[in-house]
Length: 237
Image (cartoon, rainbow, N blue to C red; front, side):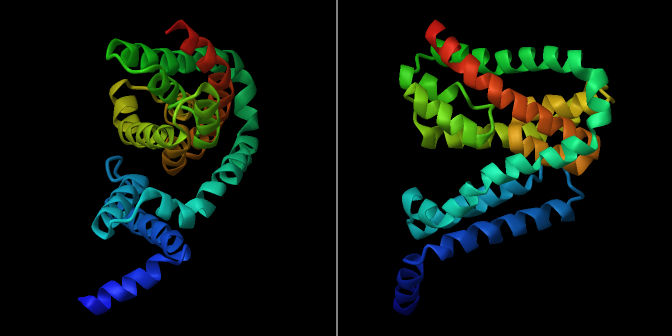
């Protein structure tokens, strides 16, 4: 046992350990998702998050120590978001006819996401800092963190809320859309991107290429609109 503790102490000092742990956790999560036939509730990000959380808890590792090694994955969020332009370009022929519905859905979705979160938080007596932290939860992580910091919120807590929002959205979107009998892949994808950003977009790409492309559109447009709506909405509360 003492030998194990000494080995762990040596490994824990290497930032690459947590980068590798993050990648391994996601590979295991993706394998579990494929084994369950890509069931919505077996989300790879959810499984990876649970595995990493358990590992950090068992080893007594702080988040700051973990992030020091895993920050390269965080850096890749930006390029990964930009790369969503590829499926968007392949579906450009379907974008123009749906321009007006997209604008209407974007305004409704973005406003609902920000205002409902702030209204519920205000009703529960949250502090102004926590409200600022909560406001951009439906935007993609790189944008949400910047909005939160600019409004005086906690970017670290915002990151947690963004991930939870994405995971919940990715889990419920398919059964919810089926229950509502929404068959148009453009509508399904766009709603997913607006409500559940990158994690939801990844789920949409698994389901249908057109849904994935429109989810990418929804995620990008929602990020821009949220950066404008969040400061204004926060001033109301």
